[in-house]
Structures are given as C-alpha cells and as structure tokens.
Image 1 (spheres, rainbow, N blue to C red):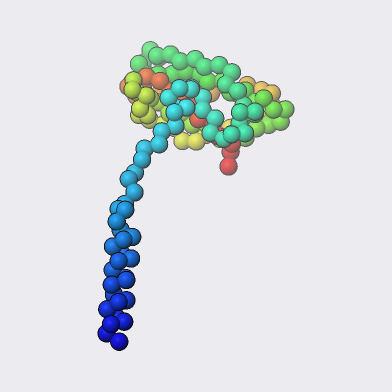
Image 2: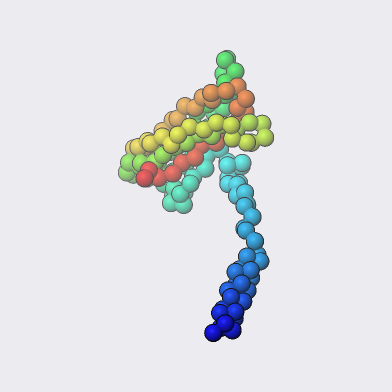
Length: 134
C-alpha cells in the first residue's frame, strides 16, 4: 500500500513540475497598423462596402488646439447606424486622448461631416475609428 502511495506521489510531482516547465506566457503588444497609416479606420469588415471617407481637413486653431473635419459617406441606399471615435495623437503617433464612441445614423447616399477638436495643444494628428452600431 505504501508503494502505491509513493508511486502516485511521484507521478503527481512529475505532472505538476512538467506542466510548469514552460513558464507563463509573455505579453505581446499588438498594434493596429491602420491607425498609424490611415486617417479613417473601418473597424468592421463589411464597412468597406458601406462607407467611404469623402474628405479630411486638419488645422491648428487660433487657440493652439488641433481641429478639423472628417466627411464619411454612406455608400448604401439605406440609413446606416455607425459609431465613431476620434483618437488624438502626439508627434510620435502615440494616442494622448480619445473620445467615447459616438452613435450616428447616416442617411442613405449622404455625407456626414464630423467636426473634431482636441482638448490639449500637444495633439499633432488624429485618426477616426468607425464601426457598426451595436
């Protein structure tokens, strides 16, 4: 009986120690490269057929804040419910502030103009994220 208990203990120890041999997984940073190369990022695959970025204007306002306009065109013939978020970036393309997701319904074949203004003078650029409304 003692041999059986000893053998069970050895097998358990091997399984526990062998299972821990690989160690914890290392965290990896996953960036969205589109946020570094595009001003309007479509977060849902189907939006490529439904939405187009019509125009973009970026300027430094008199008070030193960054401002601009983004025009999003609904390419479908029906109203399209989307959510929009703006991320303001510093000179190194690092996000320094962002808005909450803002719901918007864009009528069919219409252009929606979104005005954006940063909260700080450190903002150098911005990117607009678009996704289907939940």
